Length: 510
Image: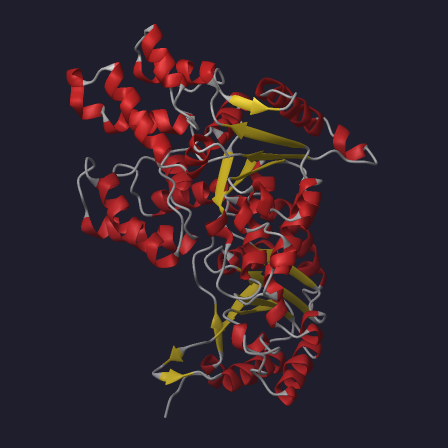
């Protein structure tokens, strides 16, 4: 026997700490304003189903709690998992929703249905089998239609995993994407304050931590709580954050940025071999003009809205990636770098989700989006063996067409690109192997050494050299110190050249 009220077996008043409303930034000011009005309008009772869905760890539950508080409503959590030693099944949760309808619909209450994936996922598994019977779909639709008080449903499932008949019953939905650096910075700051860890990890370091670790709100909280529990001295706290965060990011497939977004200190446009009539300095001016007009709203008013998508192509090491870093540095713009492999996902539809999220992040941050090794995503659809290879190309083309910021793609395999891609790029810039003047310029800049006439002639004879080759040789000879001379440097460059297919073809006359 248990003397507790029966309905506490199904739902309980939410007593968790609320985050400040301002913590959610644009989500609170834009989406939150509409939701507060809708909730207040239903405060006295009446159906209102709100769906928060998307990537786990992006703050859906925290936002739901703060939203209820801002709207002046009492939030109740539908129980899940295990409670009082008993496993709560999906059927029990559905019964709990109906009990809440009968008991708590008098007004001023909102039911928060967290982890609603199993309740809402009705379209089936990845193998095409239905995961829930049609009658169960009918049950959830009946419940959605019969809600007598506002409810916020929270799910990590993608929209396509829910039957269309279920989706159309939501009065409002919010898709939560990956956290932006600005959002992660707020989460770092909030947790540092909440845990009173300012003496160990200064709030001023929050921006750098947010840029370095592309993790979720839960990951940030977990790491800081563990660091506080271990109580290191201030000199070792940052190191401990790294030691705990790195394996967590590896486990969750979250990227760690190693601060390589800046161009090399000795970077220069001088010596690069750019094919065509539009030089890199003019490209810089064009992008600057685009950003200026975008800031003034000029582009959005034009019927034929100009895009600023750049394609950089050419052999490896010819300076494509460094130029993008230089471009962002000169324009004082944030740079978001995504490798083609970062966007590929093993599940059907996952790659399209990641592509859309990358563009949305760049839009939100007003950043330059750099997609390196883009050929893996934009290979010709005529070579596709599977339907999803076509849909991911279609998604990327759609995003490029509608993106209002600056997007740069780089590839070593121009011929592999889908033909429809080319017209989406405003400028197509070919980076070639260095000419003789470029070789001499990079040699003297990289090695800080002048060439004799004989050395220049020997260097000129080395085919297919790229800026990356000079950097590779400089790094390989770094520890040899005074023993290194120009003859040895040129010899190493000859070895680099000999390993390239293009150089071997040049030597035999093709």
